[in-house]
Amino acid sequence: PEGALERVLGAVRASRWVTPSLTADVAARWIADGTADRILTHRRTEVAARQALARSALSGRDYALAPGSLFLWLRLPEPWRSMEFAAEARSRGVVVSGAAPFASERGELPRAVRVCLGGPPTRALLETGLRRLAALLADGALSSLSVV
Image (cartoon, rainbow, N blue to C red):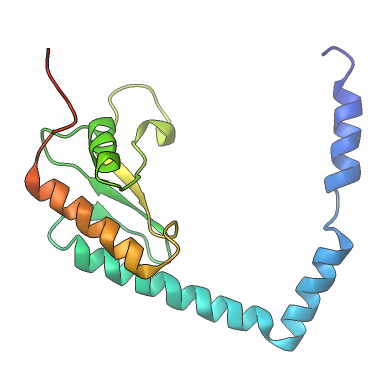
């Protein structure tokens, strides 16, 4: 509303201008006692393991996976479209994101889905989901869609 901008900006500055002291204190202690390094090492190990699972499960498939990333873009063959594939994957118990939320321009969307490698709480669940996606690509079925 008119006239509210300065009050909102003041509230944002007051609450977000600096790191809260408790957070800064915890971070400083973790850096000093080595906890931060142990967390970083663990995270890097986990990312590498999850990326290895993705490479294995999606071997021979077209995907883009950046080093250190916990997501990948799985490119889809014809006749798949992003939203159709996402719906079919969901019907098989795997949630992936279609391309639309990530598109920066209007027009035809990429035939790809975004697969989150960090979402499943365990590597076993991640591997199951990735294998289901690979099987779906191998099947080429559009079972959840009907033509009328």
